[in-house]
Image (cartoon, rainbow, N blue to C red; front, side, top):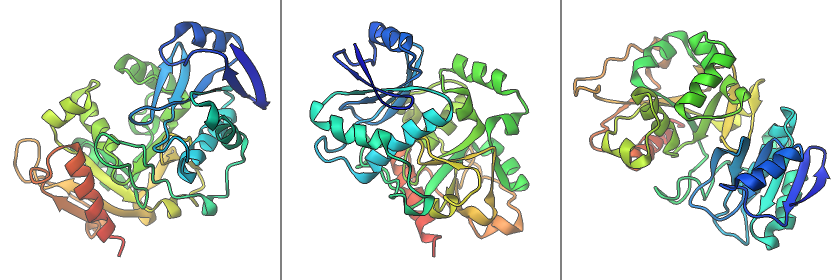
Length: 313
């Protein structure tokens, strides 16, 4: 494996197999001081994982020869975020013709918040629809915790919401199958507005275990989606971009003044009318939608996004 430094804490890996699923390559990378991997290769959709003890982000491009500004921005964001958290990034590019574009993105400085490209991603959730749209971003919660969110008027990171130590949460989530770096759990993470991931996570949290997309669709019951304007959130004092999430906010996110809409199912898990006691400040932004008429991850994410867009006024 050739390991070429292209910037502080950024290395280009060449003359080796794809690190994904290759313990030998990952071991060599770790021995060279690499903590995180950025793997640019063709795939169905972007995905983060742990590979051989290293944090890994697989980044495909919808069009291999002409990546979009958002796709390149996510590379810049991933590398910048990892470096800011003390991790050295190793970059592996599957197509040699893309190497210079990836290298330029990886060594670029992040733009000012008000000049960032929209977070729409043509690769995200390709099995469900043609990319995910970033005109709004969202976070979903199981209905069982939504009352607490509405009453408190804020979304909280996992340590803030549970009172558990970050170390305990990291171990708990690792046992559950989510081996993210510890700092990831200090944030409220938001996806693009019609991404299916927020409801997948809400379903998995309720089930208490990892479920694949087909299992989520088979026992589908949506979370409540909280929608925000990413342009407004970009000015939040604790905003961050990690290249994976559309945007994220550290520790806590006050609903007012940022909330655009909250979209909830009309019925509870037993088929009875869902009772949600929203404070007066949020009642006009709480929208009900029949999840039986929009059943499944793709149908619900699309319908809820359209309803939230109407609330933008």
